Length: 262
Length: 341
Image 1 (cartoon, rainbow over the protein chains, first blue to last red):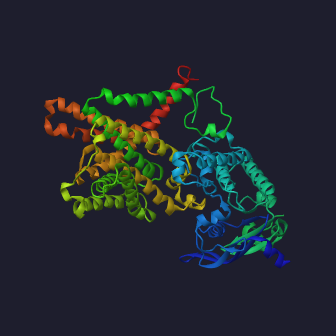
Image 2: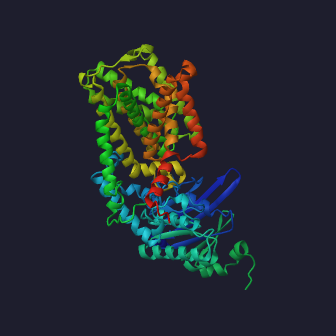
Image 3: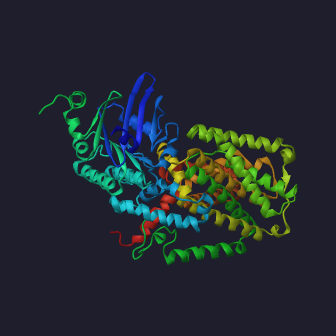
């Protein structure tokens, strides 16, 4: 069983140690994400959830431990190389290109699917033109999926927060990722927007069969959509299991949910 | 971007076009026709001004790609014009290359120079980068004076082919290049490289996360910028006939940056507006001041710079997005006028 799970893992993280000066953000975290699995990571503030994601896409380089993506060691790659392998992410505090329109934000994210150089772009002819139109079609599919049509030509600076969050997700999706890292996609949203976002995530996850890591504070969302949940506390991984197991785990309740009220 | 009513598009290619309506094609045709007949109606003073403005436009378009799109401030653009001018002159005079080849060679040489001086951009940003490009400005000028075959402080005489002795022929060559340069700049800004440049300008960390190789694209921006400068410099050498280091001063670099700001950072039309506006304004005020003896010769010769400084400050305060933004507002107003609801 264990053997099977290992072969199936799209992302495998071994013994991750990360510290900033005296602060130990991650203390020996081992996690794996299986093919077509939605793994949620929960934990109190400062538990190391975002640090974990930053290690996976090489924003931070861990002092110890290895990260494997599809069996390949990606610990020492640069962020741009990892993204080309098929790991895309969204950000907790939205990191869009505010001077570009929504369409251009998404087109920018597809740059490595466009096989022409800047000089061909300057002539806007032949291969460049075909690639632009073809990629625009794919981008429009995602715009359609995430219901962004009304704002597609608007500069990101001018659109509201909830939509920006959605553009952030769209930008990750247009890269055809195999693994999606979602860092608090529902932070700061109202109930309706959260439901929309959850629906989009489930749609993508079921339609495309991709794997995803979701960091989220909203327990109802996490319990609803996650296949498995990992709990971090002070950089240590204290539990992994199905939502049911996590709900009943006394360590988790103590660390995260407070005392059992039921 | 908004369109006049009644324009509907059924393919993405149509939606991505720059020119959408017949009226726009018509206006473009009129503009080209105007540019074609313009030199025949100008006296040699104004023809010179128009030629010089077109050369500056090429230089500023380069800067638009580097500073406007990619967000890397350069205070050394004039020096790269100098590299282009010297390289093209030397290739032509010393190595007897035909003129078109020496212009292209000069552009590529200048582009490579740009890459070298763009290397600090891989480590530093913003103000610090501006300082290091300022260093480029001074190092390059130093090279012009001290490299043996560059003619020292005397500079070089430029061999000008007979065909270009006529200012009108020169006008067509330079204006043609400026028009092509504008079209290329526009195309670069709306395709892959342009979007990546803006991504780097707006959020370099996120740009890296979506798979952009920052080092490659920053250097590419420096290369394209210096390529434009090289072409502008080569054409400038043909226009003035004798080059020396004084033609490529820090002040010119600052003029270019100022034109970009007045026009509107980050838009191709802004670069065009800024160059035309500032060039005509500074030349116009100089000519006007020369007519008014009450100002005295010293004021008359510097009034252009004074007005430039004033305009720049006024734009920074009242319209930091530049003329191109005003133009967008005007177009919007005009489209729905007189029924503004």
